[in-house]
Length: 337
Image 1 (spheres, rainbow, N blue to C red):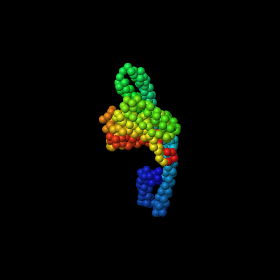
Image 2: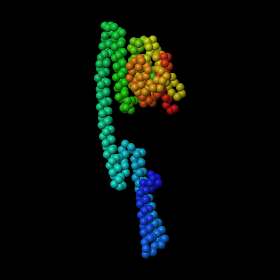
Image 3: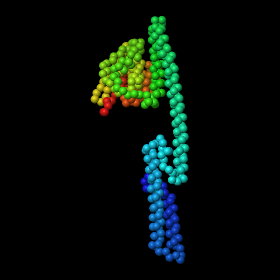
Image 4: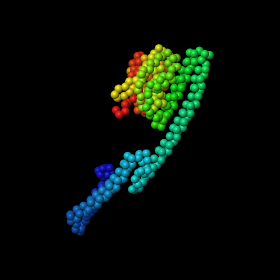
């Protein structure tokens, strides 16, 4: 707090002082029969002014110390600021402190209730996901046991829908866990080749049923990541490629690297993306032209993929030409650059 700001706050006191001293000076100077010299009047005004300055400086120093302690509380412990505030020096400051304590208490109760509600919702979602996975797994098992009894085309279509439901359930689960990401990841060094092989193997039946080829290049790179989250990210990208690649198409997965980063590329020769949609495909809930024309889309897959990639310290980008190709890049920056 600057001294000029302090004087501005005391402007009514200064105005009162000027009026009072003017009145006293006029009374002394104009009182008949009183022999008061000009020097005496100046002396009285100087003494009064000195006392006023001492009072103002004392008040300024006291308030400056009080404001400095508040500033330190703001900078050091915003969450517990009420407990670190300096002791009030007057009745006005006591009232303000009581008001802050009341606001802090209400806000804390609100946040605790919100946290409990969010915790209950997360527990419900986790429970729901695990419950629905049981019939999904049973459906997969029934499909496998029914082959040879029913038309394979029917079973393939049924399995594709069940797999799609399984993917949507996974989206819900990972979206629910996203806020608690920091508690549920372990960064280690992984070779990407085994992860990509596992990823493609998990989608092998979809490749076969949709008659889409896959070409996995030599992916001789290792990265620091979390295995579970990275597999979910890659699965969202690969599912998107499968969704928008027609029968007879090809999906290629390969790696690139340079002095700045390593890149994993998932490329397809499918329907591509309109130029005006490319910048928005990672937006939450955005389905775009392809999502409306070719299939019902939640618009969450790529959003979740890039959001989680960034939480892992990676980045995602996309390059596409409508009717020609789509390439999704997962960037792994080299450490120390």
